[in-house]
Image 1 (spheres, rainbow, N blue to C red):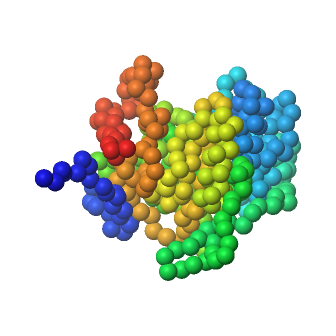
Image 2 (cartoon, rainbow, N blue to C red):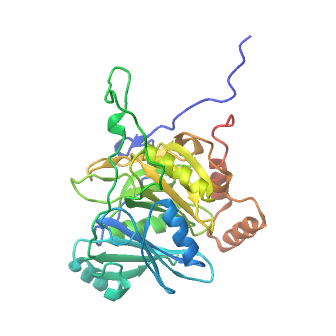
Image 3 (cartoon, rainbow, N blue to C red):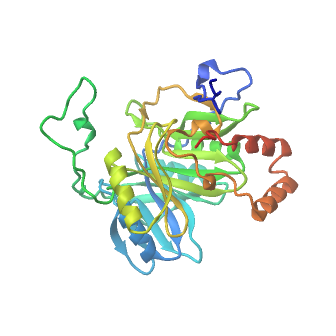
Length: 380
């Protein structure tokens, strides 16, 4: 007697925008004020700058400077800073900085978006910039003219030495990756949750010129999560530099940092574990974006991701739409940790009640969000 399978493996379908099912709503793009060129750095308030530096060093970054009022961390690339941290009563995400082409973009934002001019000494690496505040209160800096730094030495990626069936690239040689932190090459993306997905998505598309790469929709066809890439024209851009997810609060979800390859992920994982840091999820491979991933908690419980081998697209690649379900998050690896979902506690109950009373969340939408969180792979 054959035992029936306990579950069904499936990959959610992906529909190009030109061939959407009738019930799926398009995520319309507003006219852009400027087109961001890169995700430059992130800003945080942290309770303990020393502990933050220790974690980020083990994570593969390098300290540029640390004073009582500011910590600057860089990667191995030419960017002068990937993280700017200042002391705070509680640890929190403050905002993101994106680079733009020229000061003409900054002038335009001052004139048309009520942006505030930044002082040169506020910006790591100097240059010029402006500050905006998104609808949730997060800062958005647009900067230009930062002084690049000399890249740090990196080993060669090892994937070119892979032996495949019928194709031998490595003969009379071995693979011995060094046991060292996974060298962070660049800041890849930041992920935010918001109660007002449509409004927040419009705001970021307008102020950064973002292109929706993959839009995920709820059972009623309404968009609720989007992976946005930068509009770099014919130059390939990462599948996503900014991700927005609809939910029941305004919060930072995680940020992600590119490393060389799978071996860097694995050896970096060993180093972080050996130094007592708390693992969250991985190693695995995502579906949307295709990255190999490994997630970690910093000392304050904030999420940081290592990734490698992600998709890239030019601006003419059509937006695709995918049902929002847990099985679409990852292709292989351990099950999604419970911490990535909504916490089932009194604080969540009170938060939802406040949103319902204020009319910011409907009971129907709450039910749709709840259905997304069903376990995708119960055998894990």
